[in-house]
Image 1 (cartoon, rainbow, N blue to C red):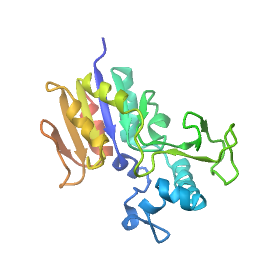
Image 2 (image 1 turned 135 degrees about the vertical axis):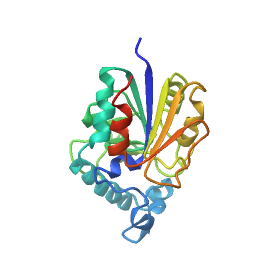
Image 3 (image 1 turned 90 degrees about the horizontal axis):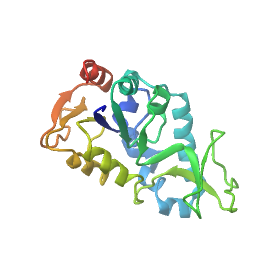
Image 4 (image 1 turned 45 degrees about the vertical axis):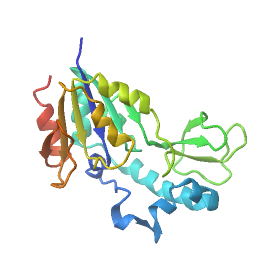
Length: 226
């Protein structure tokens, strides 16, 4: 039976593909605080502005390409059971070839109904416009988790962590909860790693810290696995 390896990934791994994090430019977008254009309150107040914010991010995602860290994680599936739990809303893991990806913060290339969250649609175009409706006649919104909303697939992510023989945390500051709390779910006897270029990175007890870029450290770590 193949051993299970879980990767918990964040903005740092996609930043190496050229995608800005939410905190780039001081957390501002066209003079607005990011929290003010990515929240339920913002959606109620000015949905057009929220759509424009995510349209810009969606265009950037479509133009980006997976990097060698994404590709190394995907290639590991030939030898192990690999589960990726990602905070990223892009599809770079899937484009690299990963087949088991849990998007706990949603997916920017999808839209969902504002009256029925179970109605989710893969977008055929680069934008969501006012007047784009679900089958129940309600405005579509990005299928992403706004600030203050509950995350997706948390129970599945916890189960994956509890069954892991190895856990690798890549490109996340581990300061955004509840997802950051997943690191505590890993078994005591699992191999556990945190990869980040930041010397001030939070490193949970029991995890080995590998300082460096994801594109350098991920392939190096995985080279001789399992």
